[in-house]
Every structure is written in C-alpha cells, then in structure tokens.
Amino acid sequence: MLEPNRLLIEPLVRAALLEDIGRGYDLTTDAIVPAAATARARIVARRAGVVAGVAAAALAFELLDPSVAIDVHHPDATRVGAGEAVATIGGSARALLTGERTALNLLGRLCGIATATRALVDAVAGTRAQIVCTRKTTPGLRLLEKYAVRCGGGGNHRFGLDDAVLVKDNHLALAGSVRAAVAAVRRSVGHMVKVEVEVDTLEQLREALEQPIDAVLLDNMTPAQLREAVHLIGGRVLAEASGGVHPENVRAIAESGVDLISVGYLTHSAPALDLGLDVER
Image (cartoon, rainbow, N blue to C red; front, top):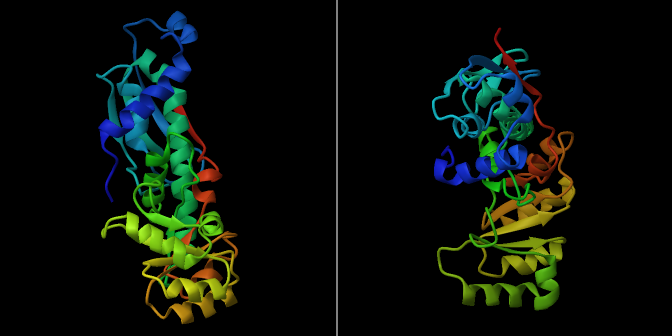
C-alpha cells in the first residue's frame, strides 16, 4: 500500500491551513500563548476505528513550524481503540493550537473512510469480492480519500476520467449502442487502457460480452440477478457490482460471485471518526 507522496499532499494541507488562518493570524492563540512557549499534545480517538492520514495531519503542524516532532502510536491502516492516542505532538504551542482543527478535520475524515471501508471488507471476508471506491469524492481530496480506502483494506476504482474507460448509460444514449461506444473507445485509447461497460440488464450484458472489453459494471442488480450475470460472464471479464450497496446487503452481493463491489458512500458520506487534541498540562 503506497502512501501518497508528500509533494502531492502538501498543497492540499497548505490550502486547508490557509482557509483557516486567513491572512496568517490566529487571533486567539497569538494573544494568549507566548511565541516561545512549547507544549505536548495527544491526538486521541474518542471512539474506535481504523487510522488513515497521519502524515497529512502531521503536515498541518509541520508547515506552521518545521521543528514540531510527531510520535506516531497507531500508524495508518491499524485499528485504534476509544481513548487511545493516535500520535503525540511536541513543539511550538502556537503551532499545535493553530494547526489543531486542520489536522483533526483531515485525520477524522480519512479515519472515518478507512473505518467504513474496513466494516465492508470484514463483511465480505471469505468471498472473492473486493470492496472498491468510486469518483464520488470531496473535491480536492480525492488522492487522500482513495488512500484512506486502501488503509481500510479496500481498493481503488479509476482515479479520474483519464486513467481508464467506463462507458456509462449516458454515453450509450449518445452512442446508440454498446457496440458503437466500445468501437469508438477502442479506436481512441491505447492498448494499455482498460475498458469497462456499465449495464442495467442481462440483455445489455450479453451485448457487452460480445465486445472487446475488460470489465462490466452491473448496476443496481439484485443478488439473484448478479448470480445470473456472473454465470453469463463465466470469468471472461471482471464483474463489478454497483448501486445500493450497504452493510446489510453487501454480503449477499459478494456471495453472488462478483469480483468487485464499488461503493460510493465510502468517500461521499462516511461519518468522520471523532478525534480530539488534548494538550498535556
């Protein structure tokens, strides 16, 4: 599992800090805390979850003061219990307080995604299905949110419109048919690019399977329909289930035999993990 390169995440964290400090001042902290004061603080999980985004949270403090030291107790992709410390931070007291909200916003969001992902991964354990995310991400945070899914044990669907082909219903409406859409795509993209087609019915699936594709997205099908679709596919291409997936039905979907289950809510509405920063007196 590769952690995002610092060159990629630093602009995201910097933008989040600038959103909070405006013209560069923390009026409350700067008035109360002497510039030379130092402190130690713990980032504590208020409830149990899976950790993701420690490096991004650390950057929120390091960009304010490079001398801040971070001692990580629960690294990314590990479970943290309620009341346990994810990390301890030491250094400039002003940096700790000014960076607190930005760090917790990022860490809580990413830990929440990792925690929700882990719940689904555990629910489908023992089947062939892999839980993957979608492009339903927070604008500007896709890199980090997709990383959080990986921390939770899931996988990533395409990162954007430019790294894989997914022919969806609106493309088919404009192309006229699955065959025409796939033919147009194959004339346009290179041989290294994967091509997937979204289908709503078994009739569409049969048409898609006659084309040179790599995967089919079985949209909003029941577990019974998915089982029939998997039988029709017969291992020729990857079978991905999508639409209406939730913890209560994910096991039944996985047991249909699909290879992938894509879940939008992991990145668009998973609740943040409750975390707090406690200064040691």
